[in-house]
Length: 115
Length: 116
Image (cartoon, rainbow over all chains, first blue to last red; front, top):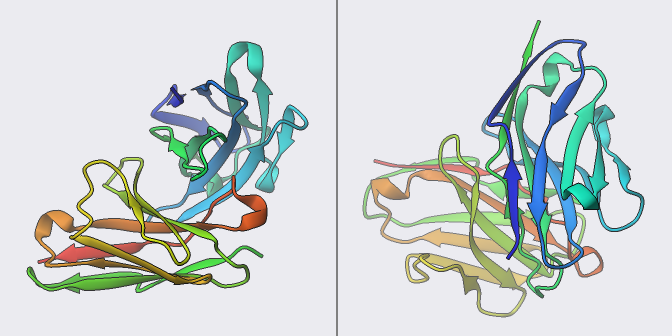
């Protein structure tokens, strides 16, 4: 069975400090992994995706994530937080073997950025 | 590229009426479209998957007669909430994927439905 666990429901950082949003996954196959961001009352924007190429994936707005198979993790990082980064972040897995390519969402992590 | 729009962005209706929400892929052909529902401060729940020209596949627990989905073209899918009730009030989000990148979904901005 496939699942995604986001370890923190809320993360609070000061502007200019590093961001770490944690995600662990469970998948029977080689999955595709994604991070999406959602600002209040908005749809989801794709930050980055991993599809079995380079394990360190660079995304938009300075975010990156590292796929670690041995740890079944796909943590999202950013060296320096900006106020505009405050939003809800979803770690998502696509099992890849289902022809419908359903996405399995984590419960989300709300990032708060303090001035 | 890969822009998905939804219309309307907000709708308020009376209990018992039906509401139609449109989802359009603006710059690509969406072979598959997905409809999600999101309750406040919760994650997205997949309601159904639709392929162009085929009947939608509904997730367990989703009433297909209440949430009618039509995917008549490669750029348009509609979700109709029939005989809406206050408990149907929610944020509805669609997404679309294309034949070449089936593992990536591009999301619309969402529709806030309020049923009075």
